[in-house]
Image (cartoon, rainbow, N blue to C red; front, side, top):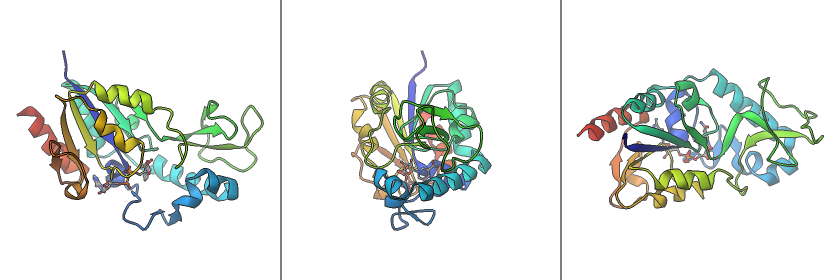
Length: 228
Ligand SMILES: NC(=O)c1ccc[n+]([C@@H]2O[C@H](COP(=O)([O-])OP(=O)(O)OC[C@H]3O[C@@H](n4cnc5c(N)ncnc54)[C@H](O)[C@@H]3O)[C@@H](O)[C@H]2O)c1
């Protein structure tokens, strides 16, 4: 039976596809204040600004292409039972060909009702506009988990993590909770790797193997380490 390889990704894996991360940029995401565009309070205050922000992110995402790291994870499926848990709202893992992807923070190419997160729609166009409504008659919003909102897929992610033989963290500052606590859900025998150019500055337990490289180069080093 194939070993279970679980990969937990953050914004860093998509950096080489041209999608910016936001840590280390004074709390700004592409020049926008996170509080204003990624919180329920921001939505209440100025929904048009929030829609504009995500319409721009969606456009960037559609234009971006999966990079070498996304593609390498697909290659790993020949040898391992691979499951990807991502904090990213882009769809680059899916477009690379990964077969099992769980989004913790939503998906930019979907819209949801602002009345109930249970009403989710795959978008036909690239934009949500003021006045676009769900079947309940309320304004549509991006299908994204904002800071301060519940993470509906967290339980599933914990279950997947607990079963991992190998757990690989790629391109996340591990600053966003509760997703960052996933690492603690790995079982005692699980081999854990952290792949990030700033791996040496990220606080993780001592058994975690750090690969301080960009995602593209780092996955190649990981491939070698896993084969040993
Ligand atoms: N592409 C996206 O979907 C996207 C982009 C930005 C932010 N976000 C959202 O913002 C939150 C950000 O948290 P986060 O921890 O994922 O990101 P983060 O911005 O907090 O951290 C990014 C991490 O990626 C690392 N990094 C930078 N360049 C890299 C590269 N080339 N290869 C590998 N790693 C690299 C950085 O050192 C950093 O540790 C997430 O919840 C996510 O939903 C998503």
